[in-house]
Amino acid sequence: MSTPAGTIDAGPRLRRTLTLWNLIVIGMVIIQPIAPMGIYGVINNAAGGHVVTTILIALIAMFFTAISYGKMARVYPSAGSAYTYVGQEIHAGLGYLTGWAMVMDYILNPLICTIICSKLTQNIIPEIPYWALAIFYAVFFSVLNLGGVKTSARINEVFAAGMTVVVVIFFVFVFRFVLGYHQRGPGFFTEPFYNPATFNLSSIGRGTSLAVLTYIGFDGISTFSEEVENPRRNIMLATVLVCVVAGVLSATEVYAAQLVWGSKPFPADKVESAFPIVAQQIGGFFLFHLLNFTVLIANIGSGIASQLAAARLLYGMGRNDAIPKSFFGKIEEKRRIPANNVMLIGAVALIGAFLITYERGAELLNFGAFIAFMGVNAAAFVHYYLRSNEKKLGNLLMPLIGFVVCGLIWWNLSPPAKIAGTIWLTLGVAYGVWKTSGFRKQMSFEIPPEE
Image (tube, rainbow, N blue to C red; front, top):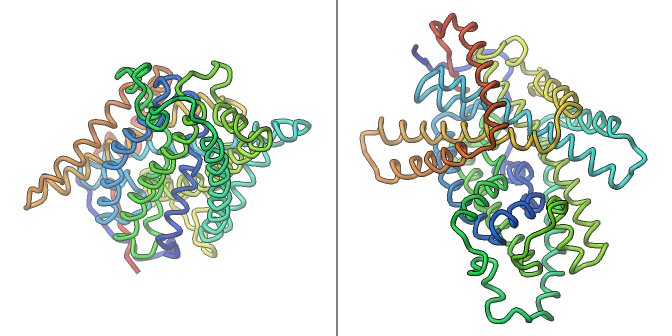
């Protein structure tokens, strides 16, 4: 089956209005500037207190994958992201399956954000029932994204600024705490990186597999390739910068938390509230509630941004008729947005909020995400090394390292995630076989013109 690359020469297209700064902000809000705060307690218990170490190891792994994403976006500045890269470079059928896996990942992100936002709001206003809040957030995310990509970008900037302020406040409290606390001896400042009493390679490996969740979402930047100015430059820069900034910021946050808490484990029923517990220890109930509220705001921002990215992925697949083009490949004339996809994702988020738990949804995220990560690394290897006249060592090692690390993480996913993900892929294969008469028909991967 061949994979001809065409161009789009008729009909409304996505408008190129996003700057490099807009992309960085969108990426940081999808990941969340306070990304490690929600999973801090889980990683701490799994890694024997070495949260900083696992975050930094995970950064190395995601850094190589981010480079592959950026380099492939230079070649194919398309909203289809990994779906397009794999389909163009390796095989149309594999590209389709990569896109199908990504659909599960991308749709689940706004879904779990709807769930957690509803539950966090109940902690503040318990009188409002969960069902009412779920409806509110699913509709809220959709209405904002129907306003156009620039509107969403401005809202993302406000959320990112607010979360950054809270992080700074937390650092100030930690600094005050550390100034008057030196009871742990000379190893006080190095213990978060290495504590011989609790260090274990197996625990570090397990903790790293969880710490990777801190970075999930950076790949969403590539889905905006058709709406960004100078995509061949800005997608690469934004993807790598977001990955590095998120890693450094996350490592700094958990380092500060571990200076306060040390390497001791959190009670099993308190792991989800671990970071606010640390905040309470140094700032009382003021800082405790501030952190709780900030996690809510972070998930609102993530829900908006991830729905925006998911709508563009579906548009990229629909435009090429991998999924029904008449619905998914349609652009709303006035605002130049894939409105059908935005509304569909909002409906799925609402229905799913009543059917699955936050924990189960978060587990399923990784299945599709790491299939996409492996696919993009493989595509970068094929394009920049196998098909290149000049065999550079960097073009061999970087995607290879990214592929192997992502493969190991994917292989160690929980059994429920593997089972559900396999069922989803099976449904995708069945639909693909029907759609292409046993994959005998061509799938095209169109590339839009650069304006």
